[in-house]
Every structure is written in C-alpha cells, then in structure tokens.
View 1 (cartoon, rainbow, N blue to C red):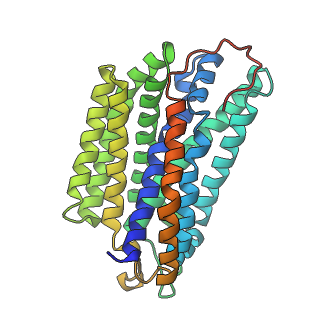
View 2: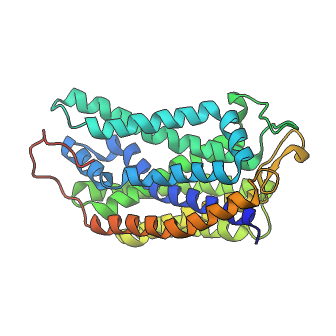
View 3: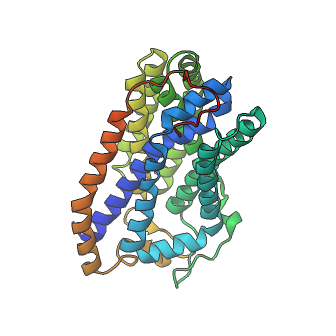
Length: 337
C-alpha cells in the first residue's frame, strides 16, 4: 500500500474518531433544553461531558493537521472553498467552549439561559455543517484546472449536501440521547431513553436516504457493506435503548457512525475532492499529496505518538466511567465542564 493511501486511511480514521466522540457531546448540547427540565438536570447533562468534550476536539485538530501535512493541495482547496462554512463551525466551537466555562459563573436564571442557548447553537451548527461539508466533498464541487474552488457559499447548499447535514444532525442527537441514558440516572435517564426512540426513527430515515443516495451516485461495490452495517447499527441501537440496555445501545450507535464514515470515505477514494467542472480537475490521493519524504517522516511520528494519545484518552474515559447523579453542591459552585 502506498503512503498516500495509508494517510488517506489515517485521515478517515481521525474523522471517524471525531464523529463518534464529538458526536455524542454535540448531541448532549443540542438536547440541553429538551431533556433538562430544571437547572439541576441541565447541570447533570453538562457534567457528563465536562471531563471529555475538549479532549474530543483534539481529533478534529489532528485531522486538520494531518490533511495539511499529507495532502496540502486538498487542504488549500478545501479551506479556501469552504471558508465561510468552516469559519461558522470554528466560531460555534469557540463560543460553545466559552459557554461551558462561563455558565456557572453567575447564579441567575437569565445568565444560565443565555449560555444554554449558546451551547445549543454551538452544538447544532457544527453537527449540521459537518454533514453539509462532507456531502459536498463526496458529491464534488466546482474546481478548475488550477485546483481552485470556483463556486460560492450557496453552491454548497445543494439538496444532497443538505440531506447529509440533516443526517449528521439527527444521528448526533440520537448518539447524545443514548449517551445521556448511559451516563445519568433518574429523570434525565428516563427522558433520554424515551426520546431515543423518536430520534432513532428520524435518524434511520434520513441516514438511509442519504447513504443510499451516496451509494447509487458515488459508491463502490464494497461500500454496500458498511452502508448495511450503519443501518443495522442504528436500528439495533434504538432497540437496545428501548429495552434499557444503554451500554449496547451506545456501542451500536457508535458502530453506525463508524460505518457511516467508512461509506463516505470509501465512496470518495481515490479522490479526495472531485470536480464537477471536469473530472480531470479533481483532486486525488496522488496529485494532492506531499512528497514521499514528508509522508515517511509523518508515518514514523504517527506510529510513535498515536498509541500514547489513544491510551491517555482511553484512561480518561475509564476514570470518568460512572453515571452522573444530581449534584449536592450549592447551585453557585462551578460546573466540572
């Protein structure tokens, strides 16, 4: 296997990890006003992701850095063409992090409600726009012979990409509800478990429509397999949640997201950014990559440090594995998030 293919695979793995891990904390943020009937409920919900949400974002930073180093032409075309969308995502992630830190600084309902709205928007907007972005990456965008994006922001808002955005929005909301059912007890757990059925129905319909469209328009023969796994994972996740098997439910929805991402990257390969202007202008793993020396050095670095990072993050999840109950602390005390 060529190093260009290795790094395409590694970038796919990084995005998969990001969607699985950041997906559930996006879902928790989006569901804050839906499942959190009281301030105590909302504090419990935020505390479930308090120790891990910022670590989950490391996967995004690493995926962006790996793309820049391994496929600089892809990075340049992507970030220039999707500039407004990516700027909106970045702004949403920044204010979301600020909201987690500042929500508990002042003990007034108005203050908390304002930051809760920020958390919801900061979670929902990236969930939507990441799906739109990958819908355009897989479906193709107008690129000229100089590998420059020639469309505008409205070009990205096509039916296929919008369906992709709605799919990731629904799937992440479901993933978050299942996570809350797994990590909380009491009223929040019961509400999350009940809501997962409704969210699951929406996610299954949208996900099936988007993945079948992807397969028929851009897929390969073998990508029917991860598509089927994604569909089965969503159905099994909802069924397990209804039966109160939260651990299995979370595992199944995580598997569905992994298979979903595999379908997208499998349909994309060997392209990294197809051109709708002329297929010859599209970016591939070959014409968008760095030189062999750069890829070789990156491979050695990744081989050394990736296991360390994975071990540390696994340890973090193990330490904070228990359910989160309603806190007995005074309401003015700072949240763990």
